[in-house]
Image (spheres, protein in one colour):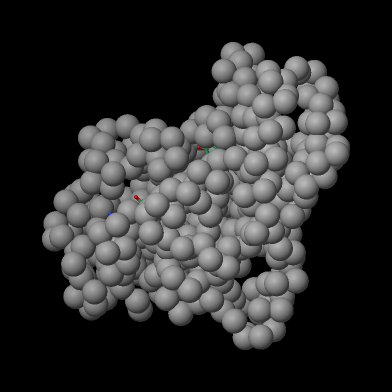
Length: 416
Ligand code: GDP
Ligand code: IMO
Ligand code: MG
């Protein structure tokens, strides 16, 4: 019996999918337990690039089974496009993917509401992915939303949709067409529908290895993140059990994925953000543009205050540090070890967004390296300064680094 969680520990895009892919070689099942198509998970193997949004990253590895658990918000129309495009790329779905009937649906109305809120000057702009994620989760919590199983109640589908539009004081553009599209989606998705909590618990008991694939990152968690500039789901390890019906006692190992520097997309405070040529250099060398929206990602130094906070929240056993290769030729490196807020030195991540916005980083400087490390496969062969940097992160986060990623390909991974 073994299961492992692979969770983003900053503001998303930590290269979780790459780590899931690497760990997938000796696993049986990969599970998505929260988020939806706001996620953009990139995998590069054998020169082929895949970007996954709702489908678990395990799908690109033949024989791995994939589960979309109840905690996910699923766009039933767009997930079919994702399946079809993966099939076109040669990926087989035969008896390999299961979707729980309880998943909450992201419907056209949710995207409209998301875009409206983002474009409304009177409201605080979050910088969402405009995928309808917040409105879909809000409706689920308000008990007004539709679940996947509602699509199979054909008799009441129209009435259920109408109720949802009425709840939001909106009129559908073309209800009949929407019903038709959803009916077609329901038919297409039917072979994938399965009660996944039973499946996962049975497989765990049978000794199968399960990977829980996080989406977004801990600093985007609805409760513990930099609210309100967060996503609408529970991204931390506590969210796994809620999202997939597997008890906390059955999560055997928790791996936190950190980038060697920090990035953020969307609005919200980012104390170590760089606005200078170094920030630009990191963005270029790291190709820091969103996998889902293409937006340039904001780049900054490693923030050990935030890092220690998310290591604690998740109860990390190990760290995977990624994109380490990107820091080559950047010059001296900085790690934030405390914040100065209103004249006081603080080592706790502030609860209030307004305080985080005032945080001035206190830095520790470390010498960088100029060598290209993207071909290195043995930890000992890394430049001493790279090893010192990794060891310092390990020390500050009080968690061992066990995986170092030095490039996007599966093979560009160092195990310690
Ligand atoms: P995720 O959402 O956490 O899965 O991460 P994304 O896929 O959104 O972003 C990570 C990006 O970094 C992708 O373009 C990956 O191909 C790329 N990547 C992953 N690991 C490495 C690495 O170690 N070095 C470099 N240079 N790129 C990496
Ligand atoms: P992966 O899984 C990075 C950010 C958005 C915005 C905030 C809320 O690829 O790491 P939402 O659409 O969820 O309501 O947007 O969260 N965000 C992400 N940032 N990576 C992601 O996913 C993200 N998913 C959402 O940019 O700031
Ligand atoms: Mg991403």
